[in-house]
Length: 549
Image 1 (cartoon, rainbow, N blue to C red):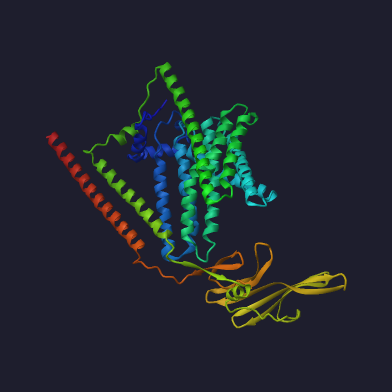
Image 2 (cartoon, helix red, strand yellow; image 1 turned 90 degrees about the vertical axis):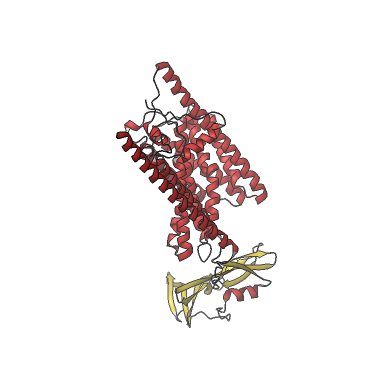
């Protein structure tokens, strides 16, 4: 039996050892072992006592790529890369956290490939089930939506987790925990991508500030929401006997549902902060207790078995290879040179993300109107229609019509005025008293020819908080990104795409100076370490020759 000798340190040294093992050099053999663990029969035996380390590499890689594509969009205004940024923003934290939990799994009988498949399949199935439930039971307010979301989403993920556990034929509590985390991670990635996409594209141009804020906010909360909520359910299903017949499994599921409901409650910012902190504390304590007790049980059982059988613990040659480096070895200095470049790349990515988060490409303003006439005139932007009554004449400017049982029930007429085309759609209404058909305008839209093509705008009816009609207008003013009622006033949010960034502003200068300092220091350190490595190599070669002579 192959067991790593890297035992967790005791006492206060555990944290220091954790960081030491996370940042130390890891050879290609360790990457190969991690990626092939549990895939072949020869890689399914033994335990894994190593501290997590690969998650840090994955996070750095995805975060740097996230920053690179943000810069591409910022400087080229090419929205072709928005889906890539959305995907990286949703997976950067979620997938990294899932890999971290997988590295804490103490046995070698589970592969990361199986965990990723569980994430994809389980996440998709749980989303489908949840959306079916939402389509049948539609919440009428924010409070009811929080309750529905808590039960529907957690139960959907629980069903997907149980099915994956049954299909995989793995019933250990920690494997159930990891599979539950994978399903929750897949659900969270799909949900985060949706939120990022919808919020970021609510403006005329993709809002990178919103992309970054949502990616970071939802990424940081990934360590205490969907992934761990479902992981606890998967653990409970495998830990307690009789599975679904055990009341403890249902209590853990209700706890996850309750945490989800509390997290989604439509409270103010002040109370929401307390709720988030409380929910995060509960789920983190729950997760730490599960991992500590289950890992201790696994390692305790194997230690007892080894002591009784007199077996010796084999050391891993790869660990010896990577930790035997000393200052007299050129690889030691090469490693720190590469580490310096990696650290500098991460820090520069952070600066790039901050740079892209500053909304220098566009500015927004507000304008308030005290009556609907001024608001409508502003929205029309000089393209309003003739308000005189127009007689119905379906032979005039024909566009299309629809007949039912020989009766003309809908017709669309067109009038062209310069670069503007007015489209009038009429619908028939039957009057039983007079036994006649009356045609009334059901919808009106206009098409405007612009240098970039045609843009169509529809008539909109704006109603106030009491449901009364406030104004009817054509939303043709492209600078307007939103509007809202405040008491008896109408306020619109305007967008100024012609705003030019001022690179002499102190914020940009500070970022550029920090970027230059980090890149300069990194290059200097890297060159110095490479020179040191060559000198050590030359010195070692000289000593070997002298010794041979």
